[in-house]
Image: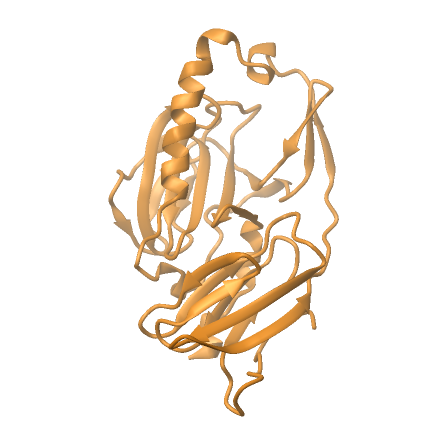
Length: 269
């Protein structure tokens, strides 16, 4: 079963155990409604629905061809189904002319990079109990899409890890808006790779990131609303021109930010 899911039928009851909007595809996102407080297991990842039964799920860029979705209520598995995961095609992008120090950082900055990595890891581990994702998502900035999610990048001829974000080219100073409500878990103007950087947890560990910002207009701990001004586009950190790199991670999985634009929580109310 693939494509837009309007309803997933329970194997244990004539009533639906869980209903979802979204797609089972590599990098895909689903917003679902089930029993309040239910344990929802997508493959090996456990999460829990909120008090109204809402839960958000994500598939990794490299998700396998099949996924298993289960729901547990009051100690009993009430739903158990397997779905095909649609594959994605990823582009190869070559970026030449970067300063050598940005491709292979010099030894004197490695300690800084490690320390920043710890901070980013702590932010990714956030599990906010809010439900900002229920507003749906909007694109944080308008502009030309210069790089799509999942592509393999080759810097100065050296293959690197896949690009886990979407790059949106826009002039320096262009407003960056919160695509959905959430809590700011990291806000820094000078990260080594990312430059100006913001992390927002939209609920249940569904965390978005905004890179290369010229201005950071929020602070850690701020609760933001959809459409709120949070930053301005820049070309800070490892960047060859002004753009926003927008990324999303859910429980260690790298998710396509544009997949959030397809989910419709309102259809499940």
